[in-house]
Length: 281
Image (cartoon, rainbow, N blue to C red):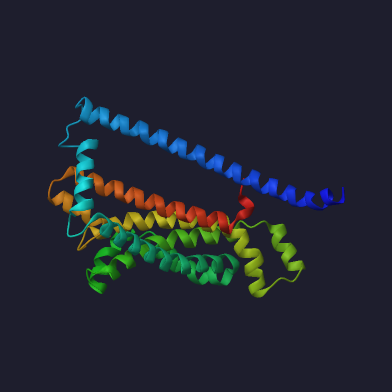
């Protein structure tokens, strides 16, 4: 009896952990099944409209067979001065660099504006003045300042990704429950401890919403920036495909952008679950 009582809590914790793992695997399997069903239906519709019944001309919108052939070409023979993985890695590197460079100060500035009325009063007028300018409008100026290299593209990505991270971080601080702020004041939580235990955890949901929007803006801006003066990159595939009047390769470039963007979004979602374990179902 004593032995059973001794090992019972360990067994309970093991069963609880196993049940959590099983539930997570089940949810992952269901999500994967939904994705596969959706992709299968879209692929079937695409094939039916193009290759099977010819309702859409392959010269205007290529079918799966033509797109697959173009994908094999860029994978093994290359297109636009590089192989597919070289294009993809270059774009992912630029997006990652621009995203981190923009999101880090953007989140900090948004938190500071939300925590301090003085900082908000100083920064907000300038921010409101620059915010309406579309990120793509900065491309000519970036080229004049930094040339046609990667630095200009990173600058444009910075402009696009900076704004969502600031706005959502600021909103996250302002939406923290007032009782929580009053309790922290009663407990005299100040300084770095106030940021670490109150502001940042309370604003995290909005911060990650801003990061997702920033990442999306980074990809949209990068593709546009790579249409001008890019040696390699997914945007360069689109540009070269348009010049060559090669619709299948253009579609390969579009699918590549979607795939790389989705993978980076999933990576950010994974990091979000680790940063906010209390939001797990």
